[in-house]
Length: 427
Picture 1 (cartoon, one colour):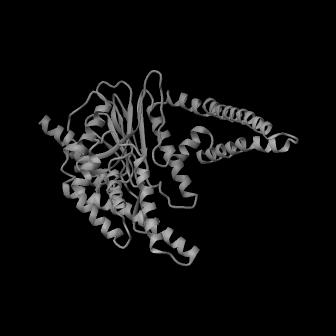
Picture 2 (cartoon, helix red, strand yellow):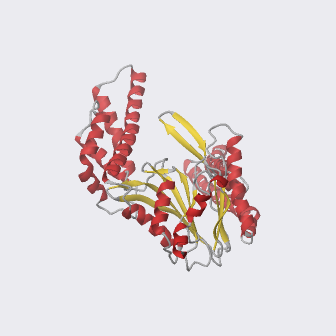
Picture 3 (cartoon, helix red, strand yellow):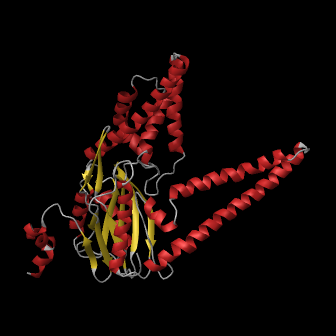
C-alpha cells in the first residue's frame, strides 16, 4: 500500500485433506470485491471454507445483503462483516453449530488419546509391561497437561466471561457422547472428565487457534478515508451463536506511514526479500549465537587457574553481563543494518510507486513463493494463476489479472448481471 492505492494478489492453490491423503488444486478463488459499488476488497487465506461453507459463497451472500450501503471508514466495513458472521446470517443454524462443535471436539480429543497411547506404548517398550495404575496416571497427566495449556490462554476480547460455562451447560450431552466414544476404554477420573469439559469449551473461547483456521484480509477505503487501510482477522468457527475470531493486524497509511507491505500465510519469501536474509536462517543464527554468548563466560572462567569459588562466581557474573551487552549490541547492529540497507530503501520506493507497479510488485511476491515451492521438495501449496487487483480512491476496485472457470466471451450475461441492480434502477 501507499497513499495512492492498495494492491492485492493471491495464488489459486487449495489443499484438500481426507484422513491421510492430500490433494492440491490450483483453481481456488481467494480475492473478491467486498462491495460491488465501493472501493473495498477481501482476501482469504488458510482454509477456503468456514464451518463447511465456501468463503466465496459467504462473501457473495454478504455482498448481496450489503448492496449499495457504504461506511465512512474501512473499520466500519470490517465490523459490519464480522457482525454479519456473528449475528445476522441464517447460514450457521443451531444444528450446523452442533455439528461443528462435535467435529472440533472429536479431533482434539483424538489428539489427546493419541498422546496417551503413545506414552502407554513407550512404557511397555521400556518395561515390557504396564500396570492399570500406570495407565490411569498417564491418562490423568496428559489430560491435565492439555487443561493447563488452555488455562494459561487468555479469553478472546469478543467472548463473554460466561461463554465457557454456557457451552458446557448447553452442549454437555454432546461433549459427554464424544468423551465416551473417545475415552470409553480408558480410566477417566471425575476430575479429568470435568477438565475435558473445560477443554472442550475453551477451544471455542480462548486465544488459541488450530492450523485449519481461516484468515480474512479486508482492504480499501471508507467514504472518509483519504488513504487506504487494511485489517486482517483470524477466524475459527461459531458455537453458541458466538464467532471465535481475533484481529491479527491493522495498517493505516498516513502522513507518517507512507507505505506498507503485508504478507499472509506463507510469508517467508517476502520476509527474505525485505530483510535480505531468510527468516528461518536468521532466527537459527540468532539462537545459536545467544547460546555461544551465554556459555562463553563459563569457558573463560574454567581456563583461569588458582581462583577461589567466590572469585570464579564474581568473574562469571561480570562476564555474563558483558556477554549479554555484546549480544544485545549485535542484535541492534543487525536490525539497524537491515532497516538501513534493505527495508527502508524498498519502503521508500513503494511509497512513490504508481498503481500498475504496485500491482506488479504484489504479483511478484506471490510468484517468488510459488517458485520456491516448485523447486523444493514438498507439496506445492502456493501455485496456479495469480489474481491481482488494485483499489484506489478514485477508480475503486480494478482487476489487473483474474482467472475464470469459464470462457468470458461465451458468457456475456455473467458480466451484464453483475450490476443488474444498478441497471434496473436506471430503467
